[in-house]
Image (cartoon, helix red, strand yellow):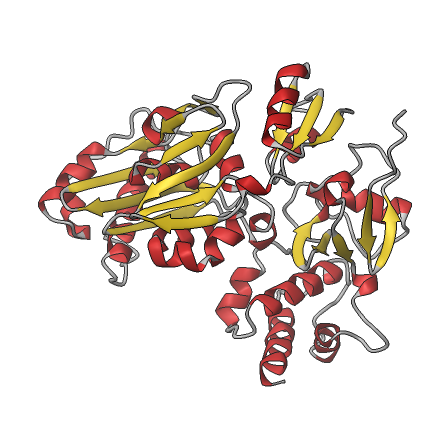
Length: 158
Length: 272
């Protein structure tokens, strides 16, 4: 065994050692080792976006990244998004009723956070295009798009 | 997936040494093709060599009408780059159409071309623009690089470091994406510099190819309508559950027309 220190990453602001097999996916590490079950496994084939987390601020599919690849990075999961108040995108999802069963919601919200940070000047068509990597089987997307538009407009006017 | 040894290369030399020493190694860039393949147990490398720490493979520069992009640049970085948008807007738009936003945050230029998926987008741009692929050992012209289905001219211990794209007068890409995978059912990249016109087609055949008949027709008149009289032979095109060879032949003309219209700054008509 190597005596090198274990690789670390930061999850929701806290340093964490990656004490796991190389083949462990980031999503399994977050759920099984850290108990962060807000990140979901939907399709497990890089399609559905239920496993989206922010890696250094960018939305990524944690089912298609090894935990060891995240070494040195900062991860934000849905559990780490709010401070004492809900994040504005969470508030917008609540106000616009942008969820039904809730399974896709953490991935949707984190995808929206990255989308709005990249450019808050989003129209409906751009939002729909940027949601290509997130599947929702309940809502028909209408209220999700409305919520993201509201959160983007709020950020732009802030 | 099966177990493997993981290495994070600190230098290119170290990555090359590992490639030579390990039993059945694979390079890991964005991992958005390799990891799904390993999860399905279609690949089981003994060692993964992670290139992500190699800053020498990052960045984009433009000088002397040559756009040089590091192999590790993600699709999002290429799409959002001011340098790429200014020098080669068609390439920036192509990068912004790959997969979905989360895939674009991880997938890389070098990974895409080294994998040479028959429906990948970048190979069409490389071929149409006459790109030169730089590796740890040599420079390879795009026309010699993409050799066959998932096959390239790369040797086992060779690593793509960057790609140089000569900037054309006009260029654009149009693709008809598979609605589930976002891979190109057919994608066409058209590039024009004076009388030098190239039309590269991805998704339609076993490997990206140049449509010389279409390019010839465009030499007389660089307009969408110039392609109307050209016969596109479906023989040899992919024929599978996603699309027949006849349909792909139809889409080649349609995507080429759209690409030309975009390159000329016109509004593309959906149907000829």
